[in-house]
Length: 149
Image (cartoon, rainbow, N blue to C red):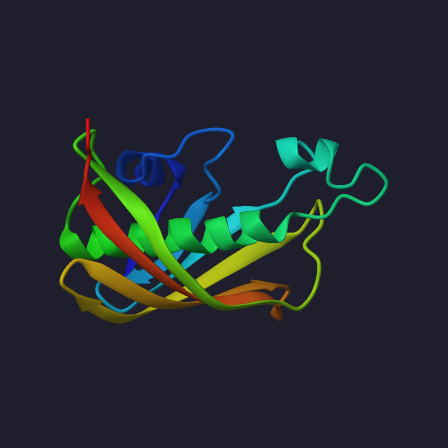
């Protein structure tokens, strides 16, 4: 089992503030699954407009958090890191469901399982939880593609 602090996450993922949405990897079984953590703070830039009277994390950001956890699982499984020669893209999102709002002060756990890897396409089942309550789930498909310059 692999466990990564923020410094190791930054070595693997290309994302940076304000778009890095993973704070720590709690566990990772290469080629199988990952559990990552996102601390949701009032300082998140999206809370200024979504919504000032009741700060709610946008669903698209929850999906992006799950996708970043999936990217970490992919890179760890390939024994690779992101580089300036390739990009990790979404190629599909299916069955996305939002069950409860995620608000400032929540700690979101991202549970991602690799369902299939075939011809450069990675398919995952992903769930986000807060205090063991399901807040969102989706099936994600991603691919690593060479940069087109």
